[in-house]
Image 1 (cartoon, rainbow over the protein chains, first blue to last red):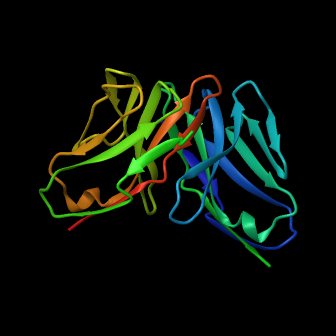
Image 2 (tube, rainbow over the protein chains, first blue to last red; image 1 turned 30 degrees about the vertical axis):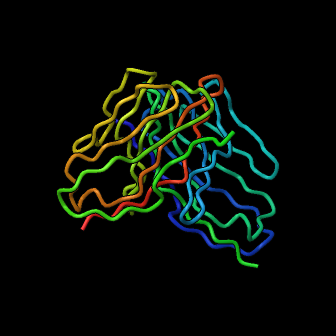
Length: 111
Length: 112
């Protein structure tokens, strides 16, 4: 059974720092991996999707990498801002098309 | 496009009551799904549908029913609410051309 783990569970950084969020999964046979952002009391917003054949994806200050063989993905946030404060969720797509989620990393960026 | 919409936003039920959580999308996506989000558990799949007339169970289907009569709508029915069903429920649809999932704003359900 696929399991997704995110470390750390919470992270607090000063504004301007570069940071890395980690995601690991137990079964390397994935279709893709997706990173989401969730603000308190809100739904999930897709940030980046990496297909299983890709190594990384970039959007603005965000860069996500995927290493299928080691079962790992990282989300790199450059020059963090207070507006980046949110919970970041990693999810891998299973064979049925459903997503299997990690429990998230709660990020707080202090001004 | 309105994207994925969910109603109601909040609901309080008594144990044993039934209700339907509504979900609709206007993006013509075939794949739709329902998740519940609980503290410390993350999001878990309840039911999903690959198209009108086709539904299947996810990880935690007990106590819930779904139907998919149209591409746009995917309601989730609680047959006899229990306190263990207190949760935040999210509906999602998938753009099959990009595999990107789009989530609704959620329904916060409390069962007393």
